[in-house]
Amino acid sequence: MRADYWTRFLIPPGVWLLALFAFPLMLVLALSLGYVDDLGRAVYGTDWSNYAEAFNPTYLPVLIRSVGYAAATVALCLLIGYPIAYYIARFGGRYRYALIAALVVPFFVNYLVRTYAWVALLSDEGLVNNFLVNLGLTDRGIQMINTPWAVIGGLTYGYLIFMILPVYASLERMSPSVIEAGKDLYGRPFRTFLHVTLPQTKQGILAGSVLVFLPAVGDFVSAQLLGGPDTYMVGNLIQDQFFAANNWPFGAALTVVMMLFLSIWMIGYLRSASRDARGAAI
Amino acid sequence: MDGLSLQWYQEFFNDSALRDSLFASLEIATVTMIVGTILGTMLAIGLVRSRAKWSPGANILMLVPLVVPEIVAGISALLIFSQVGLTLSIWTVVLAHITFSISYVTVVVRARLASMGTETEEAAMDLGATRWGSVRLVLLPGLWPAIVAAGLLTFALSFDDFVLSFFTTGEDVQPLPVRIWSAIRFGPSPTINAIGTLMMVVSISAIGLALLIPRLFGRRESGVKVLTAAEGG
Image (cartoon, rainbow over all chains, first blue to last red; front, side, top):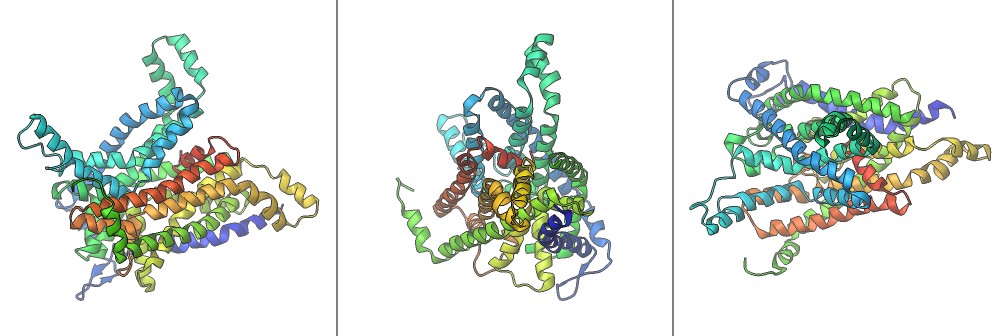
């Protein structure tokens, strides 16, 4: 079959993605050098002051905080998600399929609704505090909402599945006989895990970490609902520029800076994904 | 709140603005599913079969939307719409949703396509089928389970999406998640829980079907594979 016949299939979706994805990204880049005119309209320009402002002491901590929260989220997702994936892959038997489905399905409950449920649990007069007061463990309850841990908890709850699925996939690809061999040679289960299982699932761990980290950095729902001004993330800041402060060029500059923080992860992931695709196509 | 009642559901269905939002969300998800699945399937076929020099470039273009945080996607969509002077409405939401559904469909369909050979199509053409005939009668039926699963996944993702909708919706009719967002910020209300439960029923049905359909076509576990592929696993 002639190759150019198949090339025709690429053109409509390719043009769509260029026009509605690649070109708009360029617009973000261009607008970040713009400014707001006297009438409050965003104007394109060649003005670097938005970037200077993004790195000033008011905003820089927000960027660093976002990366910190996202990193903590990745760590928590790995601590919680890896054992879950491990037990399903190794001991799930014929229920593996049902168990994974049972994890995936709740993930499709709207993220806002799931986060809102945490508000009902954690707020000062929420279910958890009421319970603690009734038990007599505390007089007025513990402040849980508006703390960094509430925000990180919300992010972890929101993105946990992105860690479980790739780790599960890498565990499933692994042959159980390798673990048997490891046991025969080393004996202790923990050493087998450390020297055999963990290295074999490195790809899954890396993929999961990137898939949790990237959306977590840009998230503004968790910080808005479970946090306060002290726990604002860069997503809240960006969203404010577009909907409250009406300073689109500065919002665009913050977006570009955030993307720079993420670019190493994105490029690393893209490289491994396009390598996989070539392997799959052959 | 005392006791159980369906009061808040009744309130939901008596509120015509909320009802409009529900129908808007269903409409957006349906159009996104149809157009996104067609474009994504074309892209998957093109990427696997085309030998064009720029095909690897198209592959990168397809993968980038999967790694870009949604807020970035929302902002770029908002900028292009305001640049070309499109008034924000549910149709700008649809355009933004289609753009991001293409990549998910491509990844899911390509996983299936990569495991299929070209022999049957060649046999069909040896027996007199035209090239398009071999695509329509051999290739597409073989891809069908993946296409259906990808379509349902797209429907669920679009129906649930908040961030993209938030940046691209107009003032008149807002999709349900955007409506929930304003309701939550307004103050807690049991109506939010009722909306949340209704949305859950819609998206869980879609995703449940997406998991089941590949199984009904006789391929065990491929429903889970579909989802792990979609998450880049």
